[in-house]
Amino acid sequence: MKLAKRMNRLGTETAFEVLAKAQKLEAQGKNVIHLEIGEPDFNTPENIISAGQNALSNGFTSYNPSPGYGDLRDVIANEINTSRGINVSGENVIVTPGGKPIMFFVMLALIESGDEVLYPNPGFPIYESMIEFCGGTAVPMKLHGDRDFNIDIEEVRSQITSKTKLMIINSPNNPCGSILGDSELEQLANIAKENNILVLSDEIYSRFLFEGEHNSITTFPDMLSRTIILDGFSKTYAMTGWRIGYGVFPKDLVEPISRLVTNSVSCTASFTQQAAIEAISGSQKEPNLMVQEFKRRRNLIVDGLNSIPGFNCAMPKGAFYAFPSISGTGFPSGVLANRLLEEAGVALLAGECFGKYGEGFLRISFANSEKNLNEALSRIEKFIKEN
Image 1 (cartoon, rainbow, N blue to C red):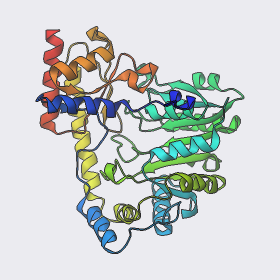
Image 2 (image 1 turned 90 degrees about the horizontal axis):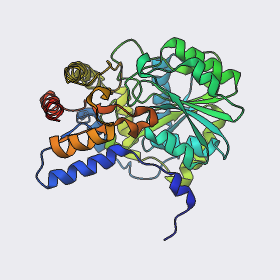
Image 3 (image 1 turned 45 degrees about the vertical axis):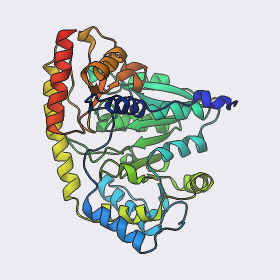
Image 4 (image 1 turned 60 degrees about the vertical axis):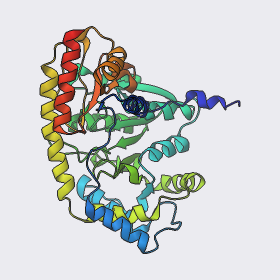
C-alpha cells in the first residue's frame, strides 16, 4: 500500500508509545510506575457522570449541530468571559471531540505551503506535527531553561518574517510547567499586531496554576479579534476519555472551522456535551481539590528530583509536569528514559520528545499517588547511583 507523501510529515505523541511499551512490560510481569502519560489520576466527579448518564437516558444519543449545542456554547462563553475578563458570545465557541481537533482544524483552515508558524519548543509535539502535515514550516520558539523555560522576546522578534502567519503559545506549558507572564504576553501581542499574525493560545492547563493568576493574551487591546483560545474538559475535570474540548474563535473563523467539523467528525457526542454543561455549572469543589493535591505532589517530586545526583529540576508554576535537567548524570535523555523503564520500572519521557530543545531533560508527570511518586524517586535514585 502506497501512502500519500504527506503522511511522512505526520508525527506522533510519544507518551502513548511509551505507555504501550510499559503495558507490554507489565504483561510480562514487570512492575511499572507510570509517569509518562498526561492524564489526571482522578475519577470524573460524580455530578458530571450522573449528568452524562441522565443525558443518555433522556435521548441525547443523536446528531447535534456541528459547532455544538447552543446552551453549552453559551455556558462556555460565560465561563470564558468570567475567567478571562473578555467579551465573547456562544457564537464564538465551537465544541470538538477533545482539544486536538482545534489545533488540527486551525492549521487546515489557515496554513498553506510556505507559511511559517511559530510554536513553543520544548512543547506539545502535536503542534510541530500538524504544522508540517499541513504543509507549513515549523519555527521553534525556544523556551530557555535558564529563564525558567520562558522565551527571549528579542529572539522571537528576530524569527518573524513576511511568511509568518500563526503563533502558538501554551501557558501553563506542557512539558515545562512554565507560564507566560503579563509582560511576555503583552510583548507577544504587540509582535502579533505589528506583523499581522494570528495567535493560537492553548490554555488547556489554565486551571492548573500553582502560583499567581491565569492571564490570556486575548485581554490585550485588539487581540480578541486575532486569537483562538483552545481549552477543554479533559484536564480540569478529569474527563480525558469523554473527548470534549472547545475553541473560542474570532467571528470570521467560526463558519469555516464548523465546516471542517462537519466534514470530519460531524459533531461532538451529544451526551458528553450535557455532562460538560454540568462540569462548568456544577460544584467546583472536586476540581479545586485536585489542583491542591497536584500542588502538594509538585513540591514532593521537585524536592525528590533535586536530591538525586545529576538532576536539577526547576519548580513548575502550572500543569502537572516536572522537567528536570539530567545533564549532570552523563546520560543522553533518550537513553536514560529507556533504561529507567526497562531496568527500573519507571515510565517517563525523554525531553526531545517535545522538540530539539528538550534534549538533556526528562518529562515526569506527577499525576500519580504520593506512594508511587516516592517509589519512583527511590528507583530513579538507585539506578543513578548504581550506573
